[in-house]
Amino acid sequence: MMQKSESLPTQEFIDIQSIEDGVIKLKSGTLRKILLVSGTNFALKSEEEQGIITYAFQGFLNSLDFSIQIFIHSRKLNIEEYLSKLEERETQEENELLRNQIVEYREFIKAFVSQNAIMQKRFFLVVPYDPIQIPQAGLDVAEKITGWFKSKSAGEGEAQKENLKEIQEQLDQRVDQVIDGLNQIGLRAVPLNDDELIELFYNLYNPATTEKRGVEIGGEESR
Image 1: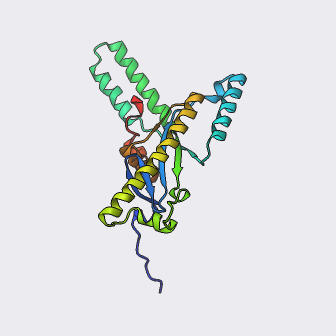
Image 2: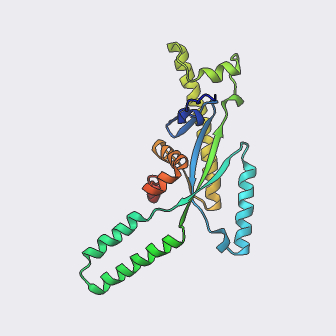
Image 3: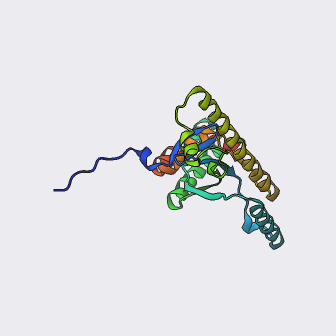
């Protein structure tokens, strides 16, 4: 008779240890920062402009001495709130002609979305930092990595906090280099803060719920 396996908590399947000060700490001891990057309609550019952008992007990649990850998050756009606002505007409009136009527009949008899924795309770039690349003299690498987030004596704890601070500064330097490189191509990039990172991972792990609730990356519109 087969034994029923116990279900594991979701955290067991996620490689994230913590998110703090915009830095993702993985269980392996490596660090990540995620940038939200603006897009550009490459297809509408002239052939000369496309060549310039391609050459600039190639130069940007060649300027990096570390790996990066680029990913696109696509999901169905929720417009229920937008339709509700149109309906509210309709009830407030006193001009009959304008009210009828709002009704027709709202019905058109509703019918169009029911037949054509409107997808929303966001572009992200992951900047990594692996502390194992810079072991301190006199410290065993494995001991250094595994000991960062463990409770130690006061002196050791302060030393490790200082060490982690230096590592995060190295990560920030990489982030600044990436942002500067993207700016030269005409792309804006901003690091996600803690709340935005949590929201992003919620979106990734709960796509159906996200589409239903219309969860957004906070603050994107104001950037």
